[in-house]
Length: 449
Image (cartoon, rainbow, N blue to C red; front, side):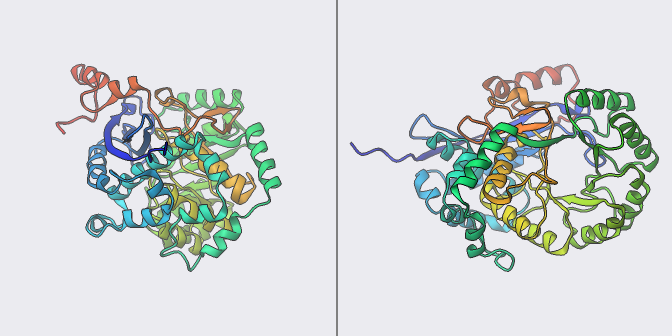
């Protein structure tokens, strides 16, 4: 009997929000009271299999992403999985260039966040059908299959299909050795959990000590609101972690270009490895100017979590505007757009250190970074993945991080499935936890949506 093709029959969306603003978890110089949120997409099929995907926001506006997913769903409902993935690059190109919806992008903003959620769900569905985690699905693909999921429009002046094929061709014995290394040793991680801007000095000190005791040796601290305050907080961190461990700082787009250069020169005595998002995430030449000015101080520029598409990444890399490439699993339009960024960064010798920490981001970027090690870079030198553990308890298969190392997931899919009780408690605004907070007058960021 002929097997019935797996077909997508419907799309669910869920506006999930977690009240992180109550403890100022996630706070920085610009986003002072975030409620970490997920626009969750569930692809229904003609079988028991589902595909789960998500994109990350920080509260208000999450509902707009969900509505945009609904506007895009006609592009996937009714299609078989094979009809999508057999020429995934073409499908992706058609999706982001739909003749009317592209006008509210193109390939940026809310429409691209919604695209990421849908595309992430397709990858999750595909991996589950193949009974593999996404990283292994990627690693098991041939160079031609990998190239077929990518779209090279607008980037062929830096990366051609032929170059991509060459980069992705690897000796099977070498690939097997790299996979075994990842499974045995894991991937290096750093923590941001001790450095949120709203935390008091003593809390920072206590958290740094806790992470040191757990084996962590790289710490990222938020900066940017007040120079004297930053100096004091960085002094607390340096005194606690010692002079040899890596310290990174993150301004979350707070400064103008001259201000960023001045501010970081003032903080250079604390020897930060990088300054993250020092200015507008769209200012490619401004980042390049900052990078040039700070190079004599040994401070690199890291950016990318709000870089809107592969074209901007191409230009950041060309201009020398990033010394650390911070892809985000949800800001770009899913894996199809992320893979060519990895290849461009590899060609131009810029290490990829993905943005994570937000709800589900740890879980998704671990797949990407393991793939990069196995099939592209073969190195963890000067590379690391961000890690923040809070909210991981709401996921079915949270990232496993031991001794400051991510260990590759073994369960099928893209690791972004929420526990059923998380959906019932944190769906906004009618989840049980939100109803409780609103009744108690504790919900800081609610309004009549």
